[in-house]
Image (cartoon, rainbow, N blue to C red):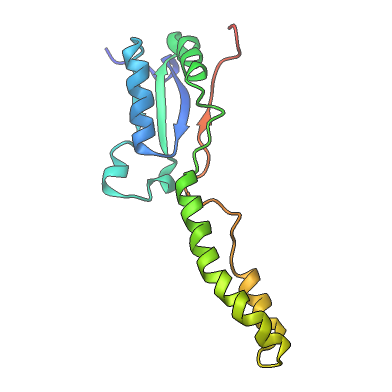
Length: 146
């Protein structure tokens, strides 16, 4: 006989297929069976987050143990945005912005360029936004000590 939906608990929604597989592997290593909803969508469609990400489902009886393991791994507080991608974007922007300002400011002073054109360049470059478009993972854990 199969499990009833009431016997299962949703423990996490993960935005990245590899991260979902690693977390599921860690849970299975501890003897907690895991079902990953939507895992095959990412194989066919890289924008699988539009379908809600990868939902990790476990038996209700293992919810406390799974919550403890996920906390032990430090996942609820982990950053998901790639620092390397953000740094690379900042360097690219600096390479573009540096010469623009180096030549643009004297051109504005000399009256060869309208000041608004430099303002458009500065407004159009979002350097503080992370590059990773996936968003944040969601965890549905039991309370500590439960």
